[in-house]
Length: 274
Ligand SMILES: NC(=O)c1ccc[n+]([C@@H]2O[C@H](COP(=O)([O-])OP(=O)(O)OC[C@H]3O[C@@H](n4cnc5c(N)ncnc54)[C@H](OP(=O)(O)O)[C@@H]3O)[C@@H](O)[C@H]2O)c1
Image (tube, rainbow, N blue to C red):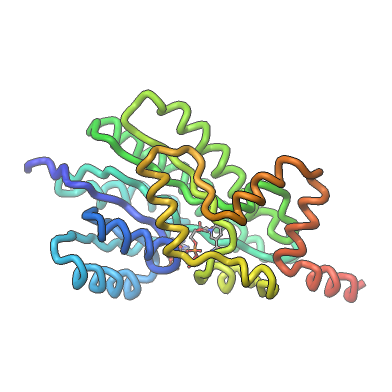
């Protein structure tokens, strides 16, 4: 079978939020798509919407729970079927667990660690090897978070997963700098998606007003990815936070994170329990 060297992008977590907007925007600039998440109905509805808007875009939909051990290898196999050469991997699937660390169910935290860290790393490993083999210019975009820039009490393990994503991605970008693979980390701050509902965060009014819209974050993410930027921080407020995080003591940054995410309520609840 002939090689399919058209531009194909694999997008994980494409059934909602940032992932769905990555799909819409990449399709609008002519990319063909492999869409991955657990909710098949949502992926199919998105694929129909995109096909209606862009008749020449090919889309493969794959329902997969990426927290499972065999998922990355299955994804590589299905994404590269029919001799497709994947030119972009958007490692976007992820979620957070919010609350006092020892009170959050361990199973849920373990699932998060697996998805946000282990599977993301394995997907980079598998797809970087595939990309080196086909040799065309290719991109890996890992979705981190502004939570990587400071301690995040009550979001402790989630923030740590994103600190891992940020450091790992920066190192990988350096390692691969002389190859045709460009590696980037997108670090969104609070963005209006299903993320806070899934994490169980009630965002305080001030932080709610400064939330970015998902299409805006994605536009900046794609531009940075195509420009080969190792670190992409979208929007003025996030740039300011990244700058401030280099100046202030870590204890103060931890307080700032608690206030921004409404953690004072959690502290009051805990004090009431004593
Ligand atoms: N929104 C924010 O404020 C914010 C800020 C910083 C960073 N981020 C990061 O941005 C990324 C995208 O989040 P979002 O804001 O778009 O949240 P979202 O609207 O909740 O979307 C999350 C996506 O991840 C998928 N997903 C979750 N668990 C999965 C699993 N086990 N296997 C496969 N797919 C799974 C979900 O699909 P299914 O449920 O259908 O599987 C969904 O498509 C995440 O990595 C998040 O940490 C978000």
